[in-house]
Length: 66
Image (cartoon, rainbow, N blue to C red; front, side, top):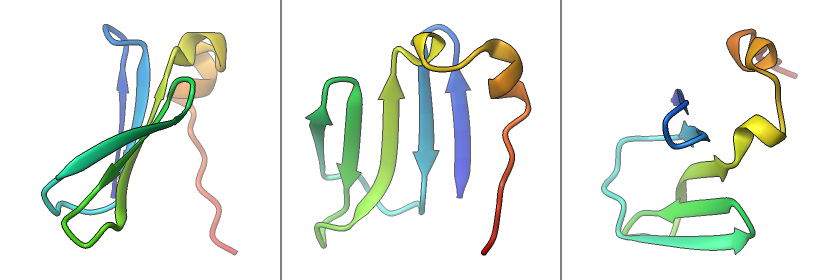
C-alpha cells in the first residue's frame, strides 16, 4: 500500500495494490476510485485536499489496525 500527497495537484492518493488501472470513476465530487481489470478498487484519490486537511495533519498521518 502506498499513500501519496501531491501538493501540486492538491490531492491525496491511496494505492492499495500495484495492479494496472483500467478504469477510473469520480463517485463524488473530488473522490475518484481506480479499478483493475477484475473491477476491484485499487486506488482512491481525494482532490482539493488542502480544503479538507492542514499541511500539519497531512504530514502526521496515523494508521490504526483494529
